[in-house]
Image (cartoon, rainbow, N blue to C red; front, side, top):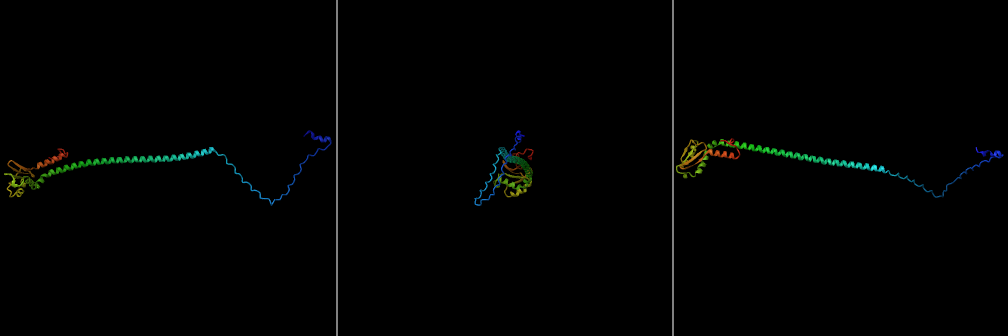
Length: 234
């Protein structure tokens, strides 16, 4: 409490009443002005300004997009290289398979040629041996035809040298005499002549069909084909 609060009491006076503020005036009743123009429409609220962009977040997003794009590109490139490598591997495999197949074909053809040559040689040897063995029988069977060729070599019988005599194997005697009947050429049997041989002899010369010579010609032909002496019939 202030020291001067008791001063009025001491002076015998009443302390002044502090001034009170006047009561507030009651507002007057206001009527709207019907003739007044309409109040302007309130202005549209201004949207709040966009927050400042987050550069770091944008950079992270761009990095993520680039990473995904790079991953996709790398995956596509890897798949492409893988397909190329697989195609190259298959092509190399096909080339190897083709080369192996051609090698097998060449080997098979070489073996077939060798076998064919062996079979041809064996067949030729069998044929020549059979021919050589059949010559005596064929000579006996074909004796008249052979005799005919001998007479053609001699020429017309009327021009035969004086003293010419036809000598044939005994089995051919009758056929030879029937063929030369009336020609005046004597025909004699010669037991020393094997089947297939015949001879016309005259003084100082003669002509002959010799089976041994024909067989020798066969052996010579076989030797020219590469057959050995053991393989050639004697």
